[in-house]
Image 1: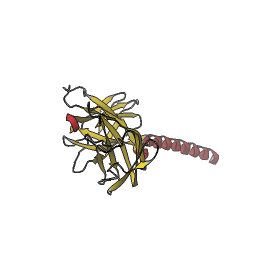
Image 2: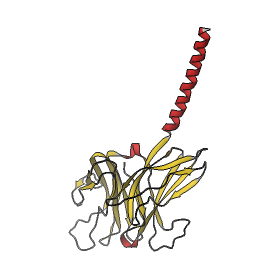
Image 3: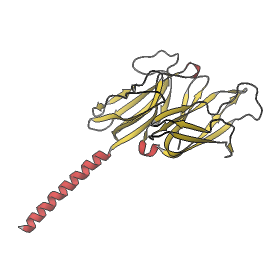
Length: 267
């Protein structure tokens, strides 16, 4: 009888342990992801106006909850986020506001099950008639990254072109930064040409971010539109960014003629 009780006890313990593992696996499936920039009708150069949209797809067979984990706004900006969203199985949803003022931008960390696919775009609405359904205009994709891998002490963006035609710069590189820390952060920038040689030709050697914030540094590889002393700075460059605490950054290259933007991610 004692052996039988021991067997029953071990069986119950095994079932309990297996159930615990299942619960643990379900909890582990919830991931936090960083969206490094969300713009709410932000005016830009050349008549551009930038609007973000987050696109969600629940590919699981169960309803899933999507919520704001943390907001990281620009300096002087207050955002309320979005209300938690419960998505039925197989459904789609879109988000076009983080509750920021019109003309402001922020980064956001989003918590959702790993079965929820999250994509994000920014569209230039400037001078283009809009339909309530869908954003119209030149659109760039913005990466959505697991926070566990997004932040680090150093990042590099490479193959940044500096095209010069008839002594005019035909595009601009805007750097986007996120500081997830509770204290201010200073990011050091270093510039290298295609042969790997460093230079101090560019004036932005560092960028300071407020605690838990988003920031943007515009036109970091400028070319003058008037007479200048040769040699012409052209070709492809890379920018290395480093700090004493983890951060994230990327490059947004915008064509000056069309305001069409391309995202160049960091590694």
